[in-house]
Image (tube, rainbow, N blue to C red; front, top):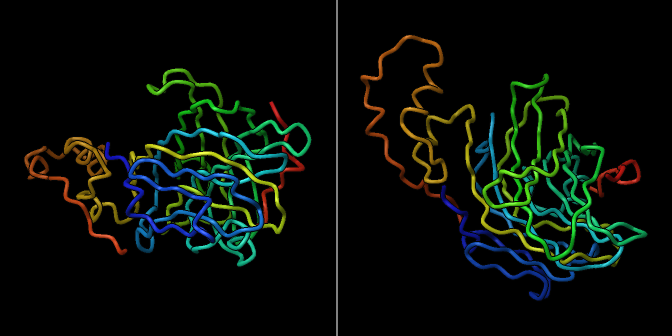
Length: 266
């Protein structure tokens, strides 16, 4: 799998002091809830469609009570999460929030559907200064409009699953354009969080136009698997030129918070 190169992303960091970007890691330090701060890449309209899977490593390193940010997100608007919500936008995200009272950090999966916020319902408490290995996937065959699931593992091989969260998605099947590795929640308050996203990969992205995307180097699937996805149960021999498919990089151009009051903690 090809790790996303964050130096090809666009960084929005007022003052230039909160976010640091290297090729494999985006680090944010004291990212407050009164700034628009984010790191994103434009993959062009409708690129993330159908079923997809992302993997990344995440660690929270500090902050204070009520700090909140996304460490992964998809959207069709370039803004902080509150701005997308205010614009009645759509999005999917995985967030880190420090408890308002205890300051304990926790993970939550979120959806914005036309400006209506949903989340997975039960936040998962984690520890500071500990690596967590995250897999986020959308399966559009589950439910009317698909289901988002976030799996959290304690080891890099992803053999020790420690938490699963899911959202049954709402109102329509949606495609997305922008991928975020960090995104603030600008609600006008000063709570902060410090963390990093690292080693993000697009494991699969099987959208409606996936034939056009077979050449993208971040889709590390074999020719046989591509064939099987296309042919399904149809008894067609593998005599075509699928074995000649090569991976060529496609050129790319350079809400308020979820209803956390309703979120329980396990």
